[in-house]
Length: 114
Length: 116
Image (cartoon, rainbow over all chains, first blue to last red; front, top):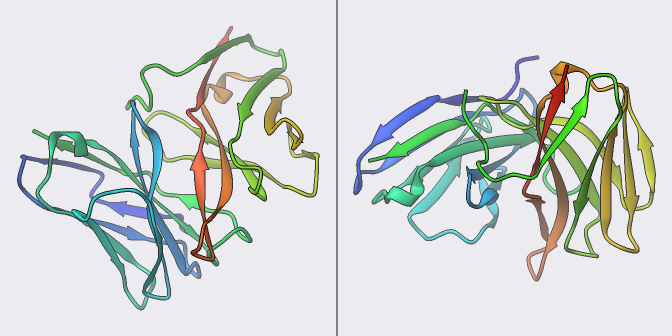
C-alpha cells in the first residue's frame, strides 16, 4: 500500500507570494493533519481535516488555510508569505481522527521563502 | 540531507549498546503516546505507541515505558545499530478544550548518534 505522498517536495517563493501544498493520504485513510516543522519551534500542529471538514486548528494566523476533497486528498494554502514561513510542512493521515488511530507521515514539502 | 533541528539534545551510544531516550509530557489528560523516528530528508516514521491504561509496551527491539505519576515517557532501543541514527520524537495525544477533538503535541526531539 502506498504511503502518504506530498507534492511538491521542494518549493522556493518570495515574500508576499502565496503557495499551495498538496497531500494524498494512504488509501482508505479519511483524516489528514498538517504540521509545520522548524528548527526553532519543532513540530507544530496546523489543522486537521476529516470528511471535508476542518475538525480543529492550531495557533497559526489566518494566512494558513486548508481544505479536503471528497477523495480525502488535502491541500494547504499560505498567503502573503513571510520569511518565518520557511519550514518543512508535513502531512499525516489516519483512518479516523482522534486518539483511536495512529498518524502516518509523508516526506514533507520544504518551503523556502526569500 | 535536511536538518530537522539545530539545537536538539543529543545522545551518543556505541553500536550494540542499549539506548534510552526520555521525554516529559505536559498534559495529564493525554491518553495516547507515540514515538516517531525521523531520518534526514524524511517525514517522521511511527515506531511504537502506548495508551494511558498501560505502563509498558514492547515491540521489535524497542520498548516504551509510561510513568503517568511524573508524566514521563521513555523509549528503549536494544542492541543499537547504525540504522537507528535519527531524531526521535515523542508525541502526546491531547484533548482540545471545548472542541471535543484532540491533537498531537510533539516533544522537541532527541538526536541519536551511533558510534562504531
